[in-house]
Image 1 (cartoon, helix red, strand yellow):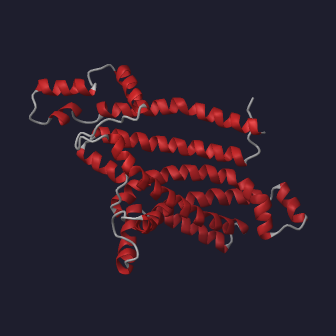
Image 2 (image 1 turned 90 degrees about the horizontal axis):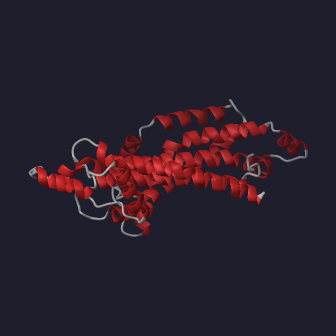
Image 3 (image 1 turned 180 degrees about the vertical axis):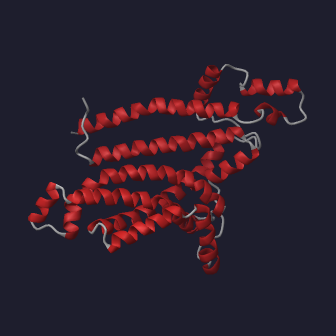
Length: 316
């Protein structure tokens, strides 16, 4: 059984190699396909053509695509994501300073979403079509239709400003300040990903309600929390893990809106600033890190599924 699970995870990890290679290729092309000349931007609008050509050679824009790709892969593998056109600082260092903020916002949002989605889905699945189920579905529809930026503004105006409990903007200077700064952004992120999580877990719980082993457990006298904990929860876990990984990916990209709204110094804020100033190396670096994080999230979901689902086997 253990070898089957490890084999499943190993194959999934190997299948990500061509995906990561493709991501690197597309990110590398950003410098070529963006409007305008990257070399002209670095050299300045008043630079002569000879100076622009020299910058293009320095950036490797005169090389064939395949050679540029090999150079880019080699740089990424050594942790070199280039140098910012605007600040002259290392892209890797800037992203390393901003990454913890983005991960903290996304993780807090996902944890809050799980804390909301699991009890809501369990309550809704107890009597499908009943009043509680209908109320949960209406809540999900409303939450899914609310724009994240509008929710952030409403939370600032209705919660942060009147109460003073949470900062309107900024990250805070210590752990307590960070925790206070995370609360409202986490609410915005969670509201955007709770509905699909509730739908997935509700469907899994309803499907399990009439499963043979659950019916047998009821015949043996199991009810309520014992029935849920011993027989239904573990079988509903794999789909919940899968949908949570997918929604965590959405949460990462959702931090772009949240960080701008709350003035958080994370990768989302940095990406918006870099795109506005056409700082292509930074845009490349942010795009690559976001994409790799999403891929790693799905690999992590496979690891959790392999550890919790006894049905994982080596396929023929």
